[in-house]
Amino acid sequence: MAPAATKRRHVILEAGKPLLRQRPFRAALGPVKTTMEKFASPGRGNGLRLSKAVKAGALLYREEPFAYAVTKKRLGAACERCLRRKERLLRCSQCKVARYCDARCQKEAWEDHKRECKCIKSVEPNFPPDSVRLVGRIIFKLLRQSTCPSEELYSFSDLQSNVEKLSEEMKEGLGHLAKTLQLYLKVEIQDVSQLPPALDVFETFAKVSVKPDTRQLYKLTP
Ligand SMILES: [Zn+2]
Ligand SMILES: [Zn+2]
Image (cartoon, rainbow, N blue to C red):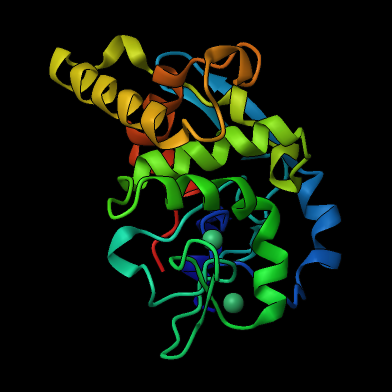
């Protein structure tokens, strides 16, 4: 590697990368991870930084995202679990929308798909906008109270919604999405008491929609 590049101390986070079955980096992550810390920058939000210098290009962190969904555009062309693109994918026999490489990917994806599968089926022949499907998945995951390794550094509730910075037009757009979500989830969630405690649906949409950097952590386009 060129000496100039070595001096630059790049920080590489790969939270948005597709999921890996083999995770060769995982065992090596411990020492690097301990040098990473959260910090708040007034007016600019929260961030992660290193307390020690590392070599340029070093992989610092890789983890599965808290929630993700194949975009509408790629529906049927990528596995819903590992996000690999394949010509021949198996189809979920219930909703007939979700597709998988094989039985293993389908099995691994079932916890994330189980409840949304009923929702997808219930709104046929329509399909929810990408952000609605994603927020649905986030809600079901929060309800399961299952821990996600990626939350070690930042939990979903840590994310800033920046609602106060939204234009009226954006707020209106998010309001429409919240209504669409209500219809989409209706078969599984009939009223607000069934939502995760203290969850604000509007803020949740703002969290996944406002900042491109934030969205990248939660939504993957294969
Ligand atoms: Zn399904
Ligand atoms: Zn797969």
